[in-house]
Length: 349
Image (cartoon, rainbow, N blue to C red; front, side, top):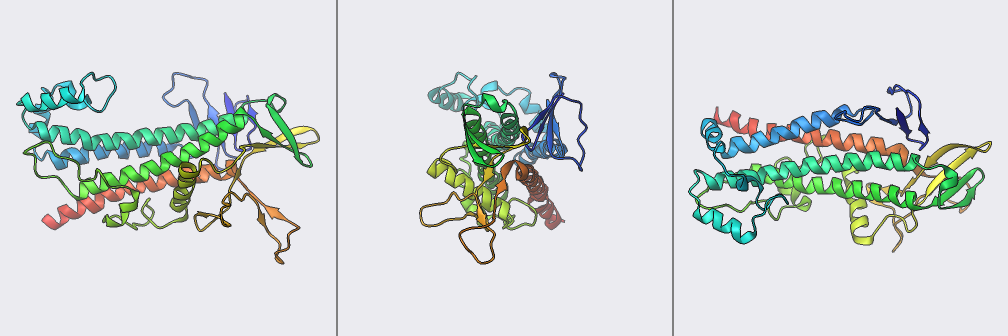
């Protein structure tokens, strides 16, 4: 059993994680396990996946009021209804798909096609959440993996600290940047899901185009769920930070010109590895004109240019970011059920 610690060190010893220990990720010896890694608060992954599955049923219930009819019909649906234009294993072309729609007399075909399109959004969120999980774990694996002397290039930084620029440093940076872009994509897709539920399609005389096709995160203020507490729609620093980091990564390439890992030694023994997180103000990158990548903060009261500086170790705050985002997404799904479904049912009564 291997344990990847937040400091970047690796231990090949049995280790039981608990809330009082430094954050760590355990790689299980049983490779056949459904979850190869475990860490504090990873239970949220299972709760989140269960709640996301519930969104499939929500769309089904909205589009097919008669469940008996629905289940009878899906027994006879051809596979192309589910896979065409969605999966690479389907060999139908655009032309084929259009012709299939025109010549088939499948009962409620347009409803089934639309349902698959809506459920595709849910599957996309599941895939993005899994990708975020992979980025989270791979960041710590990369930070922990090589011996210090095997790094490609290392330079003295401070007493007892070296900085390393290498393939591993670039990989750690890439995992981090990808994590935030995937998180932002979830924000986009969740807006589409909410908008589609909120603006239910009722006309199935033809294959309907999704009403949310042009809806993105920037349109969130139009939604009933907007500013709901503890959801991704609450005006909070975490979501602002995700927006800021994603935009910087997508539009300007990266948050650091030369990605690096810092390694600290004590009496010639390696005791810590870490990467740094840029300073932010109210969820936005601290900026001076064209410069947005400041990793140190002057802590002097007199604002002098010398003295004490603070910095943020990303490997320390990453678990907090990961946990809060998943909890907010989980609460968002719970609130979707209440705002869009329970309220409607209450009004009907």
